[in-house]
Every structure is written in C-alpha cells, then in structure tokens.
Length: 337
Image (cartoon, rainbow, N blue to C red; front, side):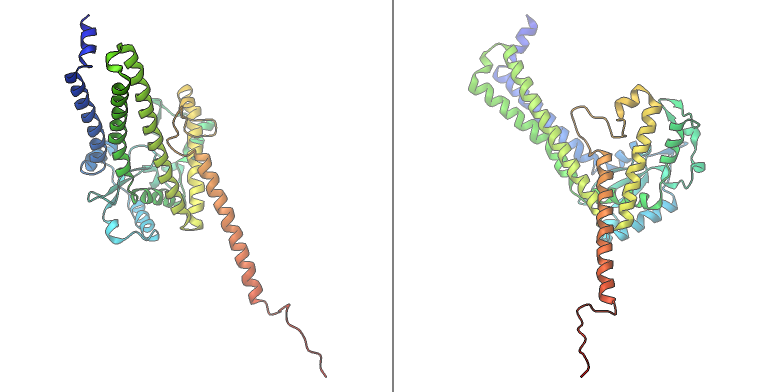
C-alpha cells in the first residue's frame, strides 16, 4: 500500500516537479561531467590512464618524443596548436586521446610503451598478463602477440598522426551536448504524451510501459549519435593520414594488421572471454552497437588507397616518359626534293 502511494505521489504536481528536477540534474550533470573530464579535469583524467612504474609516471622516451614532433611537422600542425598537444605513456597497448585543441586546456595523446620497442627481445614479458595469468610465450598465439607489439616507424607515425588529427576536431563539444539534449527531449516527449493521452490518470503499469518505450527511444538515439559521430571523426582522421602520402598509407595497413593479429592472439589466449571480446577475424565484438569501424574494413580501405596511389604513379610515370621521348609519333618527315 505504501509503495502504491509513492507511485501515485509521482503523478501529483509536486511529484512531477521532483522528477523534472532530478532529470534536469541528470542531463546537465552527464554533459558537464564529460566536458570537464576533457577540459578542466584533463590532468586528473590523465592520471587515471597514465602508466606508472614503482609509483612514478613512465615518461615518453626521447625516440617517441622526436617521432611525435616529426609527425606534427609533417602534418603541418600550427605552432600554437603544438603547444596544446601533450604526449604521455598510457597504460596498456592501445592509443589514447582526450581533450581537443579547440579548448584552452588542450589535448593529451597516450602512447603505449611498446612504441619504444625495436625487437621482441626488448619486451618485458614478465609484466604482461592475460586473464591474470602469465602468457605462454612459446605457443603460437603467444608468439603472434609478441610480434604484434613491434611496430615499424611508419606504423607508429600513422598511429600518432591519427590521434593528432582526432584531437584537432571539436568532437568533445558534440559528445557533451548529446546527453543533455537527448535526456531533455526524451523527458519533454514523455511529458507531452502523459498530458495529451491522460496517462497520469491511468494505472501505473501503463505509464511504466510508456516510460520504458520513450526511455529505449532516447537511449537508442544516444547510441546512434554517439557511434555515428565517433565513426565519422575516425574516418576523417584516416583520410587525413592518407593525404600525407604513401608512407602513412603503408603505416596504416601495418598498424591495423598488427591490431587484428593482436586481437586474434588474445582471443585464443583468453578462451571464452576472448571470444566475447573479439571476432575470429580480430574485430571488436559488439552486440547492438557499432562503436568503431571494423578494423578489417579500415585495413582494406588503406590497401585500396595504396593500390590507387600506385596506379596514379604508374600513369604519371608513363605520361612523363612519353613527354621525354626523343621520338614524336606525330612528326611527319618531309621528303627531299
């Protein structure tokens, strides 16, 4: 009976006001939390994902730092923006980025420690565990995992450049707007349906069905917008790397190939958990969402771009050879009189 009275109270004017206040706080809080983590609390965010050794931050090696500067120069990043992009050593073996150059707080780019490795002999195997267990490095999957950690300079430059291109966009503004917009619009939609269809005077189970449907609609919209914009920005970043020429295209092919190889190796090493995380081909395993473009698709796209570039070079070379040829097929010889 008490439970029923509480549900009825939410249908009163005071209850609706309480609900409005709570949802407003949730909407604004979600957006503000995301925005702050990528701006004013960026340093705190970095501390969470930073790699530590004996309680001390692991610094970026001189080799990687020089490579980082080289990539920014080749991308022609303005000098002012360079000051706002800071590299650091991230925990794990995935690239990381947060913030953007469109804010005063700038951006951070996390570079895995394996970027400092030149050969598999440089890898500290004792500190690498999978499923809280030591890896069987002698197994086929273990050997492939080791090999996947070693990247050429071209692949490293591509990975760094891709993250730089991403933080040069204004993605954080869009992602910060989504929560407040979607939660707010979902609430307005629900309130209008309640008012027009008289759901406030109907049994709670009917209102519960309405709230469930509108909630699922709002959640679906958030997923769609979040994933769509993420994939769009990732595509733009890939295209920015392609525009830099053959070295970056080849680097992209190698980088995505190594990611696929790593994921396949982890899938085999992790057993059932690995099968839930990765597909047979090495792509991330998703249920309903598509958070990122499949790695196989991105790799194939770069391979296609490399083929197109080679064809263009062949045609250009052929035209150049014809222009430089001492024989002109259109030249007519005039017979001597």
